[in-house]
Image 1 (cartoon, rainbow, N blue to C red):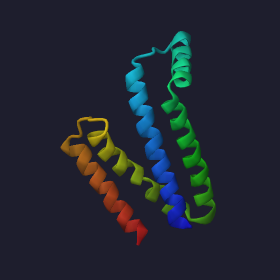
Image 2 (cartoon, helix red, strand yellow):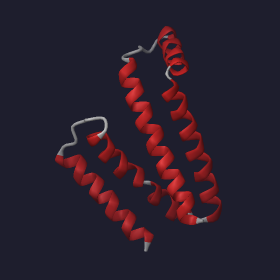
Image 3 (cartoon, one colour):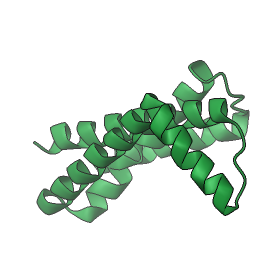
Image 4 (cartoon, one colour):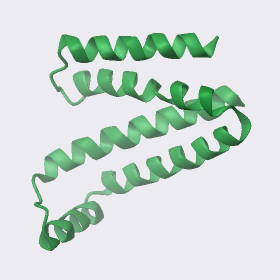
Length: 119
């Protein structure tokens, strides 16, 4: 059950973040005023992928809570950092973002830490 819940946390968080990033970049700048907040809320309502993103983040949150009930926090938090590795890869190959050597090295270090705590 440990690995199933962890997979749900990571996968739904990654999908949620990826959808959120893509859709908000398509929506453009909104500003920080009340009108900007209203524009973001309208954008969320109109762009169904943003609603799906919110749903994914909710699933990830509740799976995280279930995982913390069963496993030590010292395992759960570092293991859930796998989202950083997957999101870095997907940012590069799906969103076509530039991922420089420092970011790639950081993701590799995170991956190494995950491997250490998983044993």
